[in-house]
Image (cartoon, rainbow, N blue to C red; front, side):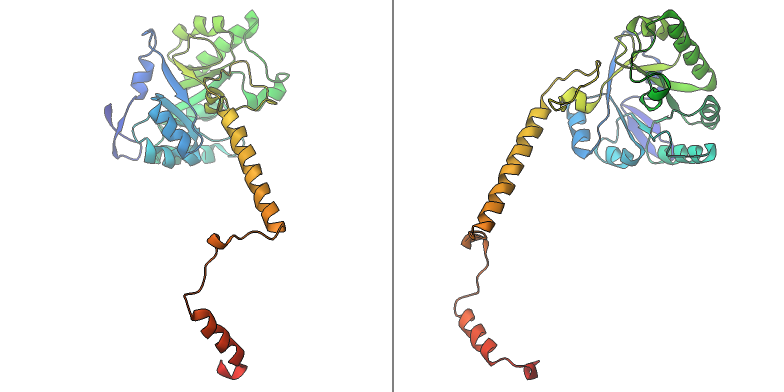
Length: 282
């Protein structure tokens, strides 16, 4: 654990710092990162000893309440903010609330602006699902030499404007292996092979939460079968609701043991008073 001051100038402790992540280059050591989406998943990730977290900006308080020492990247949706001034204000706000890294898909100019102001920025290379309509859909990247070189050029341009880390998604593993040692940027490999400095996967994919009808992406590997439990919970819920409905329509529910009764002798007093009641008693 490292003692730090966070970006709100408060003393804090982190399991990893930005400097620690940068020193992963060439060390052979790999860290894990996942994206817990609620308090239960944060607790599960902590208990499972996941190294780093990636969450939405609206989740940072939950993370800091449950996992105050975990290095955490926060992200906002690409189109949520308009101007660069709004983006910078949002980044400052997220950092003040406990973020360690701010993820954005915005322009090189916007990234450079944030980096110049001291915001540690994470970006994205390879497959960017938000922009998949520009490249013909969800697909692998860098399978051809010219596209692989473009990935490297983009990575170096990001390095020049101050990017600290990137999510490297669905890049041919040979490409990430070749370029990872040629950049200071920390790479979070999502479906891009073993060469990334940090290995990333989504909680839903790790836990096997996809239904039988879903078609998870190639990079998704289920280490569990939470989907089976979700189906079991759904089936149990439907059965319970159906039983409730049947008992109501049959005139059986509420059951005597679920009802409240008056104390002994009080019913008679109440009925007698009710018979004598008139508006003048109000």
